[in-house]
Length: 230
Figure 1 (cartoon, rainbow, N blue to C red):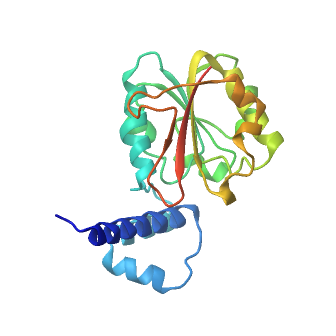
Figure 2: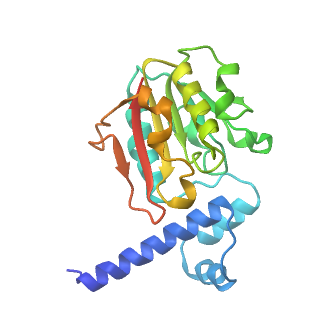
């Protein structure tokens, strides 16, 4: 049986790995060269992730929030025939396998404003910010919109956030769902969520696999998933 001290050590080590993978994924520079060299030599899979990321190749993330997204959230919606038409917001090296692995039989779309990231999107892809989605789709078009890791990473102002969620509300069918993933840390929450009026137009949805409408993952950046229904 592990002692409390051993458990705390292992937990700290896991958080350090999570934070390192997260920083590398978003392009933050390490504090020193040793913070790259040591995990390159000792951490399984780290060297491969670094090389693939630098080469612009698909690089899935092995972090707790991505495990929740890929092993709990995606399978739930994939199994429900009421959610056939799906929009995933934001593309990068760690999202390129989503259509092939999780949504191959869905009418799956991606949207991303950076044209250089188009290669990591779906076959059906739109180059545009989320707040312009209504220019490309009719009202009630989607059954599900997944907006993960965009708030505080492009959606950075009150009017911009309001426009984005208003467009989500417009493009979701009645009864459609919005999955909203965000980092609950000050530097990544540019606007208090209760100050975005359109969010109040959605109903909170208790997501069955997690038993709550708001789920905080065990990550150092406090990644949180909120579930809404139109």
